[in-house]
Length: 113
Image 1 (cartoon, one colour):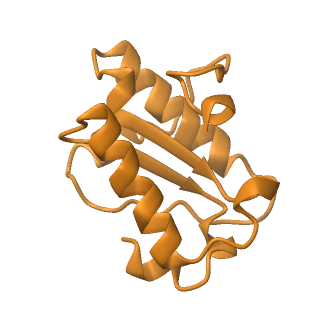
Image 2 (image 1 turned 180 degrees about the horizontal axis):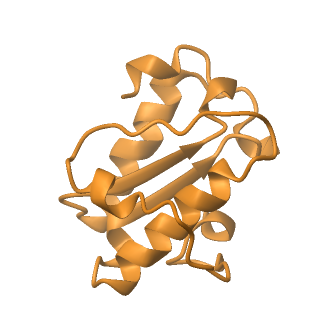
Image 3 (image 1 turned 30 degrees about the horizontal axis):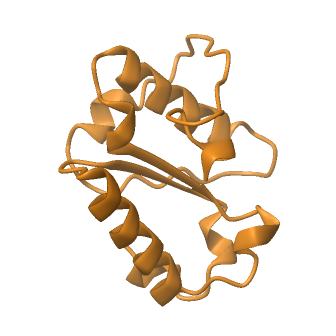
């Protein structure tokens, strides 16, 4: 997970966009970004997360799981939930913001939410 998270090796050059998802994330609900392939959904999600970190959200309160990563290729909802639980126990995250990128690759992903 180090490659895909701001608390690890991951970083992006965030360019301010007309879309600001940070206000939507503060509602503590699931937010689903959907649209055509290669439209920038992941970039918007990662940029919003980076913006929250810049506004004093602890990096350890964030988690990005990219389900196009070959190591997560055959993960199911139960295993995904176990990864999340282990991460929260390890970091002590109380109010995490989680990005599940390409979540449609996870069988029964709706159960994770």
